[in-house]
Image 1 (tube, rainbow, N blue to C red):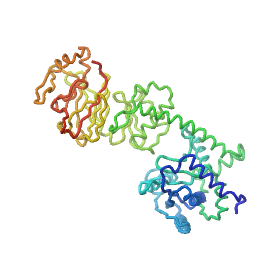
Image 2 (tube, helix red, strand yellow):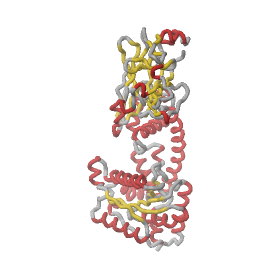
Image 3 (cartoon, rainbow, N blue to C red):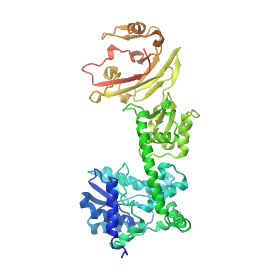
Image 4 (tube, one colour):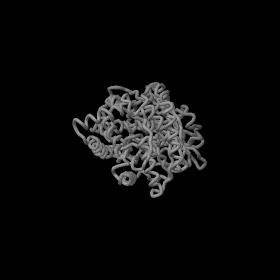
Length: 488
């Protein structure tokens, strides 16, 4: 029995406090408690069971057999099944061959186990028929150990934040304000049985070495309150990191490719180079990389340094983990996921004495260095059309183009004799005469490109579209051309 008769209520109130302060159950109707069978997860399940009526959520549990400890792991699963049956709680149980995953991916068993667990949790959330969160049993000691491990390996401000109470993918950590000692007292006071993982004492695992060796040494020789000190550090760093990242996210919304249907991600180089704070640029790089590859994508400092080389022009491209490629191209810092990197084939080149000639596709943003202009082309269903001022509209069906075909257009400077259709019957007019009619100054005419498809001029951005391909009331699909950059 615990020497603290109030420990059950103390821990329960700490969990409720964390839930309320950090909105852990916002828009959540169901909570799945990750249950390993250890003291932490048993305590978590018991507390959540106590408060589920008050907080109005359904509760179930989930257990993943890591297949590392043979019969011991099987006994853990059986224990979880008995515990849930006794408590009247549904249990979802699956197995993952973590040792095999470790060998296949060339990663440690620790990391392989973490990946397997979060894939399991993600599946639970996605398969849920209601708004669901998965609660893990990370506690205050885990917070301290995590930030200490990151300090040892090398980390920045965001890394000092440590374990978050809530992740964007539906993972919550209600026990982060509860110490391991309090958890053990709780289990004793509530007479809860639990399993002890034999690998928890194996110091070949980094976290175990920190928990069993380094922290006790620091407590003895330097600071007996090191756990609290590290948690205070992670709280303080978290507040600063949240501010910096919030600022970076607002800035990212202004610097990234502005078109909603663009398939690749990019940052505007000219604007990026005006930012003096390297820490903000670093966050912008991370945000763009995550945007291109997914929210769980991570970069180390060595990878970010490679991107800075590209920004400074010391390198034309950087190859990052998982096939992400970063290019400096036409005024943009492009982040290309593997499929997009394979498709990129545009080049600025000279063709038949034309000043500039660029092959352009849809869902990409192009900066024409010769003119300082930017252009993008997007094929949009008429039902989803959202036109902004100065957008150029053509009938995609009349052109015979679709996204699936990956059509290629040509943007080039005008040449003598260029003509564009100005009547529905196809009758054309010389661009020279068109410019004179529009009172476009002579010195600006050569800066205005023409957009061609199949050798035919279909638009003069900012001036006119071909009458043949102009949309009408029967238009179902639009080619939207967004062009900025020249003065008439």
